[in-house]
Length: 194
Image (cartoon, rainbow, N blue to C red; front, side):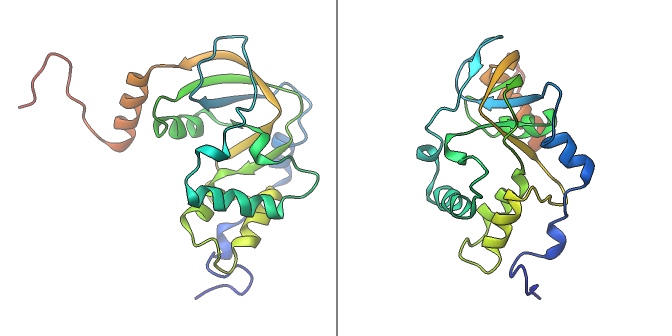
């Protein structure tokens, strides 16, 4: 059965942001530390700017999702296409990193204000859905209102970030982490599988 308000999306999927989560994400007065996944190579103290190639790298469903998010984006929020995304939590960044071929994982300091704090889980739900379905627009609007899913993956939209640490720039490490997350046992070097 579908909710009248959300169409195909259950109302339980969304929770209103708690006051303390807004304080953590949007009303930051302290230095903001986060985690960036990127294919580009950086070193400690490098400044990461948006690549400007975000939309071109997306498949048709991803482009359609971004078009929907742009259509409902409030004027007070920055366009996603020209923004830099930083994960708030290391475990969320690591999960995303394991899925990105040739991805590198960085600990960063946000330079400038956090422009938006969104739940990537909401955009992932939209991506897997029929974007023309009833409720899609409302779910996209909820993303821009900083709504939260039951299992939020917080992404900060920022103007730029400074690399504090290269956590991993090794494709071999990324593959091992992916295998571990997926429960795949990789063969040991020098040993033949039995």
